[in-house]
Image (cartoon, chains in turn cyan, blue):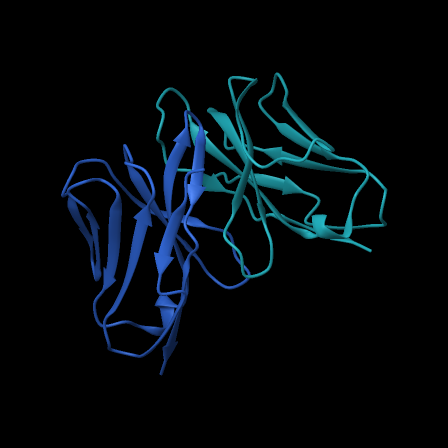
Length: 114
Length: 110
C-alpha cells in the first residue's frame, strides 16, 4: 500500500541557510500535517492544510512557511536556520472528508543545522 | 495552552509483565488517539476513542477513555519484546490539529 513520502530523508545545513522539506501524502488524502520532533521529545504540531488551504497553526516560527499544492503535496520552507531547528520533521496525511481521522506518518526528514 | 501529559515517562518491564500508561488532558477532548513509535521510526496509529467511558481491545492492548473525556489509558497484557517503543496519546487542539502527549517509553527486558 502507498505510504506518505518525504524528501529528503536527511538534510545538513549551515546556520542562516534555508531548507525545503517535501511531503507527498497518500493518494486521495486531502489533509496534511507537519510536526517537529526533537530528540526524546513528543511530536510538536507545526501546521496543517485541508484541501490546499491552511487550516491550523501550532508552534511554527515566523521563519518557517508552508503550503499545499494543487496535487496535494506540501512543502515546508525554513529560512535563517538556527541550531535549535535540528530535529526530525514528520509529515502526516489523513483521508478526505472526515475530521478526527487517523494520521498516517511519513518516515520523516532529519534536519541537522551546523 | 492545552496540555497533554503522560505518566510514567519511562517504564522497564520484564517480558511477560503487564504495562500501563496514563494520559491526562488539561481540557475535555472530543476524541483521543494513540500512537506507537518504535526507536528510529515514525508514529504509527493504534486506535481512536470517541465515546465517554469507551473501552476497546486489540489483542493484548486495552484502551480506555475516561468518563469525563479528559483522560485515557493504554494497558498491555503480558508484554513482548515487540512492544518496545514510545506510546503517545494525542488529542485534538483544533479542526486539523493534534496535541501529542509527552509519551511513555517502554523497554521490555527478555
